[in-house]
Amino acid sequence: MRESIIMKIHYGTALAAVALVAVHILMRMSQKFSDSLSYQNVLANYHFLPYALMLEVILVLLSVHGFNGLRVILLELKQGATYEKAINYGSLAAMAVLIAYGSRTILMAGMGTS
Amino acid sequence: MATVTVPEEKKIDESPAAPAEPKPTTITLRISRVNPSENAEAKFEEFKVPVQKWTTVLETILHVKEKLDHSVAVRYSCRQASCGSCGMKINGKPRLACYTKISELESNVVTVEPMNNFQIIRDLAVNFEQLFSTHKKMKPFIINEESEVQPGTKEFIQTPQDLEKFLQFSYCIKCGLCNSACPTMATDKSFVGPQGLAQAYRYTADNRDKGKEDRLKIVDQSHGIWRCHFAGSCSNVCPKGVDPAMAIQLLRGYLLGFRK
Ligand code: SF4
Ligand code: FES
Image (cartoon, rainbow over all chains, first blue to last red; front, side):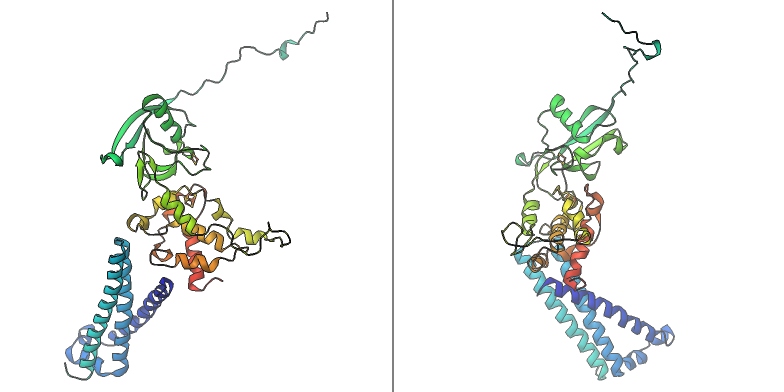
């Protein structure tokens, strides 16, 4: 993939994540902070489909943005064909694992199996 | 024979009191000495050099070569900030030695070192191979099938506004000071660097040129334009008033679709 496309995704995910995390924080502020972290309330969030979907989107946005950022930092740190290939595929794999694991948590909590 | 009498007040004083030459002061010039072929550690050697207020750093180094130690390695040519040969770190900042006066440094101790981010040949002389090959990769020429030099082809007309878009970037003398100041180049040896990117913009922004797509493809890779963090050190050190940091942002505009 061309680097400019990757960077467009990088900037786009940053902007979208800032907007959605702001919504997420505002939702927390609709009640007392300590209440918002109580077991029942946290679970209720996952049972509310639009909110659970938003958390999923935030998870994807932050994983894509974060792992691409890490990839860029590591590419600047050291160079070499094998190393760069390992970093590119490694960050893609790490991104997929984190999204899969986070999605599993959201799904299980949403379905009440956790 | 006729004699002419010069009136008293018009007589020229044959022994006018010439303004006294300002006395040279002496500074300590610390030169980094290193010879990578001998695997020796870099060390500083100190020389006492007389300077006038107009003396340049290059002149002090040449004084050392002429009178004190002829083995100091330094590259220079034009002595007038045109050839781009004499770049070095002077009191920690990349500058042209022929364009930096001792008086402007406001210090009696002047330290000269080879530029960062370049391979050292010896002492103050560095290898420009990567700088020049990157410059060449940017296709630093007008790409256009039609040409003013071919008979029967048209003349390219440019308005002052067209010229304004790239003029300052064409003042680059390939001295490499910007690459030396660049923090990304310090860690990423494959980074294109501000000099190359500024030149890619210079030709891309020229409305006679048709090589935009080629150049954008060259800079749009993992060690290309996106690795610039916009520190701005390149523009801060350029002796010719080129603003490579701005060129990089303008070039990014083409890739992000803000510019056509
Ligand atoms: S942009 Fe300025 S500092 Fe960089 S190589 Fe050209 S003249 Fe030197
Ligand atoms: S000697 Fe040519 S730029 Fe300094």
